[in-house]
Amino acid sequence: MVETLPSLASLSPGTRAVVAEIQLPPAEARRLMELGLVPGTPVELVRFALLRDPVEIKVRGSCLSLPRQEAEAIRVRLPDGT
Image 1: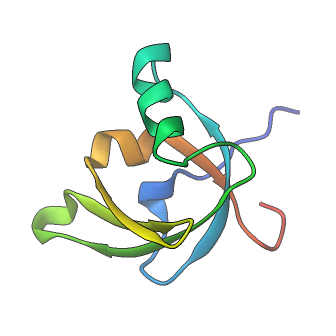
Image 2 (image 1 turned 60 degrees about the horizontal axis):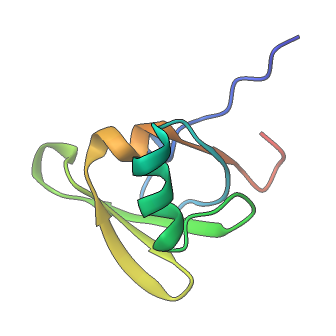
């Protein structure tokens, strides 16, 4: 059975999760990893801007704004294991 992980963009504000994988081309994924978004890192979805784009997240004590498209490519695991 193939596991389907939720995207960071699908979370509700205030939800905490752990980065599982980044489904972007290598150059784009590398940029996010340089910002601290690496598999195993805890993240929190802080809020959405108007029209849900961009997405504000908290990672490693810093707040980042990501385009919704990038947030949709970041797959996460929730504390309950999903």
